Length: 352
Image (spheres, rainbow, N blue to C red):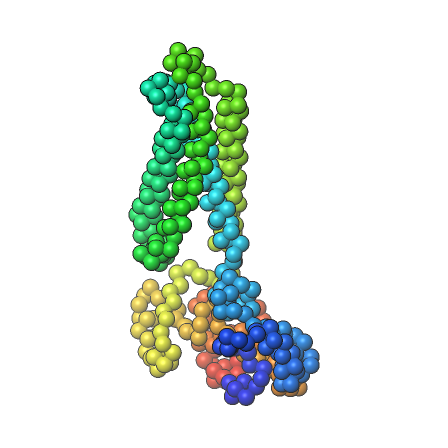
């Protein structure tokens, strides 16, 4: 691209600036408009807005360049929300079962109070039971993650892993969360059980009060509400994924194998490699391209006729070989495809 090398309009590269610790990024950014006007035409300068972005904000921050991989915090918040709902459902279920079991444990409480146990001792015991259950659940969850990680990576062709360094960061957080969950979910049942009157429960006349019944009903309703919401969300996401997987992308992606080969080796050995591959009866067509069709190939400015320096239009360009469109079964709506019958196609042919 000899023209682009000397042009201020070539914006295919990402510029990284290392500022002094005392430098003000906002002050530097304020000088961008005048700098751009110096090297670009006014019409061209109005088409873009230049600003700085901290390195730590590139992935989850505003998408300033479409060819950089980026994430979406909405997905993270959504997953956190789903996790919180499932955790709440588990807490509600634990509290509900604990209250239901309070009738069977009433005699135990009565006997212990007769033998001199104080209310605080009973509360600490049942809170301890709740904490042990919560911590055991955390250990079981970690074990399931370790067991299922390899299976999921194999099924979905992923490379996820949890290292010791990862556990060193998240384990204290999860352990603290486990303690909080254990205390919160076990607090109400512990206080309810500790209030039992020995004479009443030992005579077998104990009945759950109206407040306890109302709480159980509320917890059951909350569980069903969360469950219905999760099922509805699962159905919606499943339909969206089915739509994405069945959407016509304009090319045939089935039974297509992509080989990543260094550029120099690919250019020098392409014809021989293509000939060898086509000797296999299972290989229908072979072609080559300068990148994947994922929008991350960078862009170069295209200068319309009569346009001056700095007035180029950014266009994403893919260099492809003959038979590329035939290999991916891409239909050319107007004109013709690339062909070795036209020698100028190697340098002058463009398909939009």
